[in-house]
Image (spheres, rainbow, N blue to C red):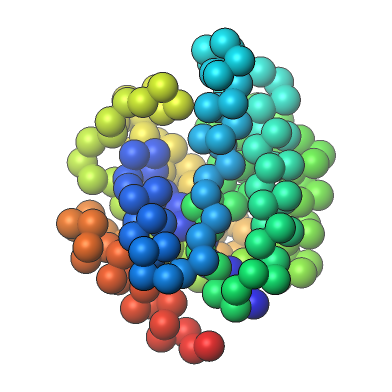
Length: 181
């Protein structure tokens, strides 16, 4: 089983790349944080990221999705990983929850994700959404924190530079294919 991670700054186009990879037949797993935010906002909670349990909810959903996808395909692509949740905790100035520490220990011990991570670079802007309320300058700081977190946990970043969507999808797909069956 090969599981690849797409990460990078908010608004860089990770989800669009993920959908493009799905269109090419790759098995993909959507980002957990966006789902946690959307569910809370549907219940009337405007800013769920301010809740103390926010990081833990992301970690739990990521874990459930990863385990549910475990036997589906020999290659999977994930929009973010628990290392991103670690970067989020750092960026928000929050302590890293024990559940996140345990999940990072699990994914490391079990070699869940490939050591090469696709780092999707910013597009020169950050479009706000109901789930993404961050300025472009803030997104660049968050991008830096993501890089630091992935390096700290021993991952190699494969740079996916700003380009049109088709080129970015082709770059990621070719890199996945070149790593063998």
